[in-house]
Image (cartoon, rainbow, N blue to C red; front, side, top):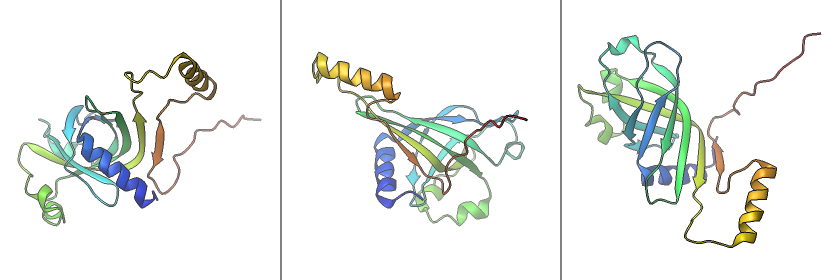
Length: 174
């Protein structure tokens, strides 16, 4: 589990950026379309709550849970954030009425669908400030570091799942 200070850092950054591009990454025929979302709440369990427009198809035809990616960015901010996780469609009236978050419960409507995303991985990036040019020697050193270690300056990954992400491995057949 993610340390509380890291979760608070991510909560603050998400609330600061507020809006994200929502990408459904499931492989089923029907999927929620890519849209811009505005995060209402990030709770202490690492879950984001927001609404998406209700699709024209019957909602019960969609997968109830599916992988998603959210890309947070705001012009003028010195950072951006990419979050991967598992989304859950919340449609049951009892579940909506049982929410502890009154602000979310009051916004449910007929033309919106409530989505809850359990964050599994978050990538935090800081933009290099172009107005503060540090000189050609530092630029050269940063470029060499990037080439040698295949990293981006200001990149900081967070893994929010209890277990690490699965790695693909190849075992040769004898």
